[in-house]
Image (cartoon, rainbow, N blue to C red; front, side):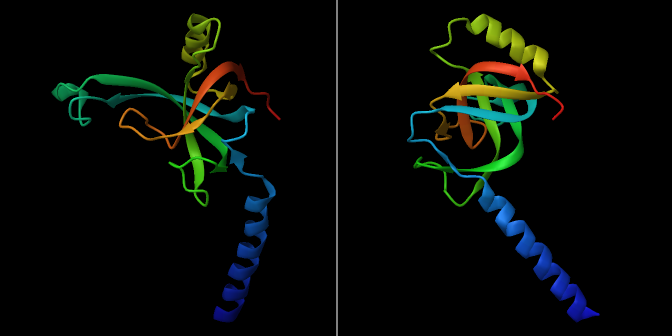
Length: 147
C-alpha cells in the first residue's frame, strides 16, 4: 500500500513539473509589452513612518493587486529570484498613459473581477512602498473573457 502511494506521488510530481516549464519566463530586460490575467483586488497598506498600521498614524498606501490566474517566473531583474514563481502583481496606471483618470476609474470598477492588464516596463519590488513581488505600470485594463 505504501509503495503504491509513493508511486502515485512520483507520477503526480512528474506530471506537474513539465506544466510549470511549458510557460517561458517573462524577461524584464526585453523591451516588450506584458499582458497578465488574474483577479483584481484592492488593499490599503501601511506606509511611512513605520509601515505597520494606518490606525496608528502610518500613511495609507492604497494598492491594486492582481492575483494571477497562473503563477509566472521572472528573469532579468535583480530583485526577483528567477526560480521563484510570482502570483501577485501590483498594478497602477503607467506614467506614459494618456488618460490616468480613465485607468483609475476602470481599476475601481474592476475590483473583484477577472481582468486582463497590459503594461510596459515591469520591475521587481525593492522598496517598502512595493506591495507585491512584481510591479507593472499598466496602459490598459479589460474584463477577462470566460475562456
